[in-house]
Image: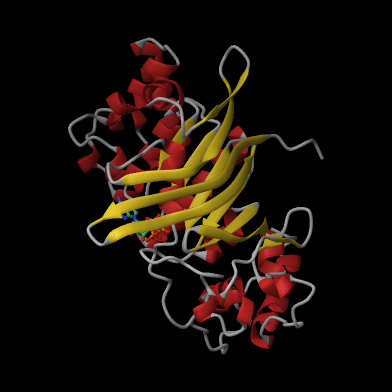
Length: 362
Ligand SMILES: Nc1ncnc2c1ncn2[C@@H]1O[C@H](COP(=O)(O)OP(=O)(O)OP(=O)(O)O)[C@@H](O)[C@H]1O
C-alpha cells in the first residue's frame, strides 16, 4: 500500500456562539485527520457540531461566532509547489479567491443554498472554471457539457440554458456536484447531501458521489446522521458527541469493534443494520447536554448506562485501540472494570460481519 498523504489536520478546534442565552460551546477541542483519496464520515446526533466543524474548514463564519482556539492545517498543490495553510488564520479573500471552489468544494443538503436562482446552470458552472482555471468562455462551455454528462444529466447542451427552478431536486443536486467538481478540488465536503432528496434518488446521488470520488481520487468529508450511509461510503468514521469526536477509526473498526457506549447506542438504534428484523430497536435515553452549560466529565455520562463515577468528574482522554482506532471512554482505562458491549449489539455485529463477508467486504 502506498503511503497515505495527509491533506487536512484539525487540532483542538473550539468554536462557540454568542446567543441571547449565553455562550453556546458548539465545538470543544476537536481533532480530525483527512488523507488524500479517502472518505471520512462525521456521524452524530443533531446539534453535535458536525456542520459547525466543516463550516470552519470552508471559512463560513457568522458574526456571533468565536473561534476559541485550534488550527486547521490544509495542504494543497498551489501550482508552484505544495503549500500548507491554517484555514483559521488565512484572510477571507485568500479563501474566496485561492481555495474555495478550486481546492475545497462543498455540497450542502439543499441544492438551492448553492445555486443562484437568477442565473442559468451553464453560467454557474462556467464561472468557477473561468475564474480558477482561466478557461475561455468557449472552453468552459465545452467543459460544462462534459461535467453535466459526467453527473448523469441528459441533453446537457439544453440543460445549460435552464434555470435551477426548471430542474428536479435530484437534478439540481447533480448540478451542484458538477459545479463542486468543476475545478478538480482536493477536498469535497458533503453535508447531508442526500437528505433533502426523494428516497429513490438518494441512493443514486450517493453512488454518483462515490464513483466520482474514486475516479478523481478526491478526499471527502461526509456528514450524515445515517450510519447505513456511513457503512457504504466511508473509509474512516468520526463519531461526534457534544462538540467532540468521541470515537474514531476505520469504518470496520467502528462498526465491528465499537468501544464507546455512545457508539454502541448509535449502532443499536440503527434500523437497517440488522439482518434480524425481529430485533427490537434500542433508543438512547435522554437528550444531548445543553451546550450553554459547562460540561464536567464525559458529556455522555448522564445518558450512559455504563457510566463510572469518574465519568461525572473527569473528561476521558482518547485511548488508543489500534493504530487507527481510538475512543474517549474511561471504560478503556486499564483500571476500569471490564464492561462489554450489550449482547444484542454483539449479535447484530455478528450478522453485519457475516453479511459483509458474503458481499466480499464491500
Ligand atoms: N450561528 C449560530 N448561533 C448560535 N448557535 C449556533 C449557530 N450555529 C450553530 N449553533 C449551535 O451549535 C451547535 C452545533 O450545531 P451544528 O449545526 O454544527 O450541529 P450538527 O451536528 O450539524 O446538527 P444537524 O445534524 O442537525 O445539522 C448546536 O447547538 C447549534 O444550535
